[in-house]
Image 1 (cartoon, rainbow, N blue to C red):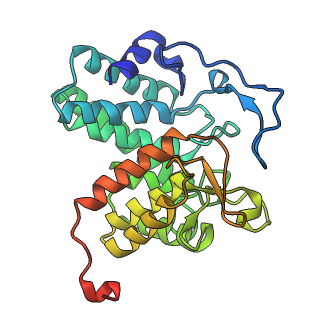
Image 2 (image 1 turned 90 degrees about the vertical axis):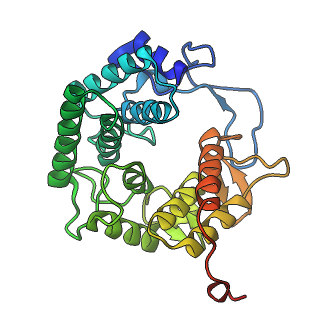
Image 3 (image 1 turned 135 degrees about the vertical axis):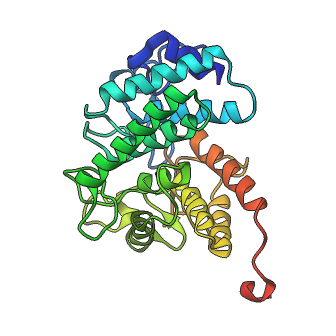
Amino acid sequence: MRFVAARLHQDGPRTSPAYTATGGRIPDQSGLDLPGYPGGYDRVGNWVNRQFQLDVFGEALLLLAAAHRYGRLDADGWRAAEIAADTIATRRHEPDAGIWELDDRIWTHSRLICAAGLRSLAQAASAGHSRHWTALADSLLAEAAATSTHPSGRWQRSPDDPGLDAALLLPPLRGALPAHDPRTLRTLRAYTRELTDDHYAYRFRHDERPLHEAEGAFLLCGYVMALAEHQQGDQEEALRWFERNRAACGPPGLYAEEYDVGQRQLRGNLPQAFVHALMLETATRLSDAPLPPPNSRGG
């Protein structure tokens, strides 16, 4: 928490999505004179310093809200929260790279995850901040609903992209809107139908190729599916998603970013911190829930 708060104090509205462990600048992406893993690339570094990701500020608020729940949010943390909330208010209409670091657009996920962060911390804030942050969250949700609701009633990726995206499963999990909201349910069911296969999940559809030919299954998305089914009360299906993706690790027990379902090989960044974080969160949440009745498990 202190690391994130320090970055917000340091860089304010220009806070980067990533830093070195000491808070420094991530080196720009470059290649190495190495063959690379089969199907992979010999790249190090990242172009993250050149990106604006609005969702960073929503995620920061979610982290600060969690710190408050555990009695760890100090005065510097509250000031960092004000910086994040003010940045959301002033930069909400700017296109951003989004969670997947793509072309700049008005990504629906970015706006909704900011609404989630604002709602989460508003519950603990002073009366003035609480009213302001709740109103800002309501405004973000209303604008997203007006511009990014698909004709079928689900969320779409952006006002100009009607496609589905795994990132759209996250806002209900973080409190942007209720689990029983019709858009939550329709997005989950449409995503399950169109972007998953054999309990492996994909980010979005790149083109007309079969999903597994365009890129590997994203293990992070598989754990998000487990959390989404858990939130809907389907513990048995949540466990299926968890176990399928939990098994997609290498011999040391580490996860890559992607899993090639056809070749049964790891792909992409290795190790991938986000995957491990979601695996641990999912394991914790599922372990706190009662197991399905034995007869529903075929026992």
